Image 1 (cartoon, rainbow, N blue to C red):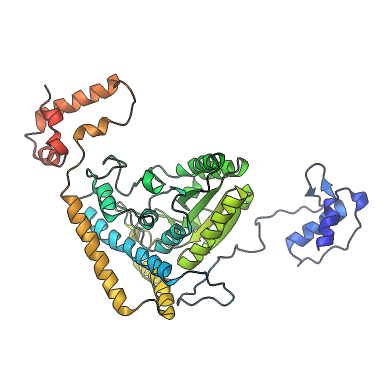
Image 2: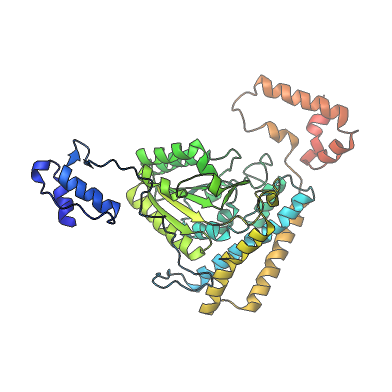
Length: 449
């Protein structure tokens, strides 16, 4: 086969020796090589010529395979190469995967009590998030969607910081209480502030990756998004930019089966998100997103390729969104409870890793009970502390927009707010209660002359 490729590379038909046509069952790649040897290539392109009218709908012969290390019972698959991870790293992976649902349980319920305005859980996707976070360098620039809190936690973002952002109190240094809950940002942890509009981070990541390449930094840009975001035009713009203006950008698609209420089967007719990578000339892999070891290995290799080749890589993690899309969603309106309960049992990311740890002698039932109790206590303690803290002064909402002299439109807005607060701030109970949550109780407006 190698000699045929060498012949084919010469181009013109005069240099080629005809070979018999392969049988119909021979893979498409071999048939194309046969055509190239017998009919030459399109001038100046190297593209093989063929006399056959042939359409294609796949870059591979059959569905793209899914990379996996652990089976559903936590055993290493036959033929799989077990990653080199020690006891400390394996336990840290498991503990962080359990910290996410501990946070989700409390903050989801807190939203239902009206103490925060919004929340999004990571139920079912913990292995994809934590496994990928562990494989990255902590200085890699992350552009997340809105289920990547685990990446921040892996990098040392504290529970106090999580609560500060969700409650918008005076310790929310990055966004000063002006962002929706779970829209995190932290320059210290190289995590760019999340924005609500879908897929905006995808083309931005290509630019960040290119900037890192220009600065010759040994880091990459990492962009997380769901398969629903891949239906946006920004997905194609981003991957095209990262391909044609090469940049070390790792695109991580969390294919959790739903774009809010739209199932994946109705989002695309092709072979998922991974099939799109080769169209942009991007190295691509599909991985079992509920297998934390497989995600870890795949992302680690993807990061190596990004750095060494200076080019983008696409990783599609196949997982399942166990929770509702957000606190604004009731997923049982479009899927059955039985389906969700069934998916909790099949390839459960927590159970698989726990069984693996136990098989190594790295985890016990007593440690499991202690971990659950400790995490619940730590999360509750952090929330109670954050709940008592004041918000930034009310006037902060007008800052960090314009440099230099304050423009007329901001002055007008501040004057309008002052007028309304003087009229209703001390008399209308909802506003009166709300003002008490701010530093200075809004006096910079209510007592303004």
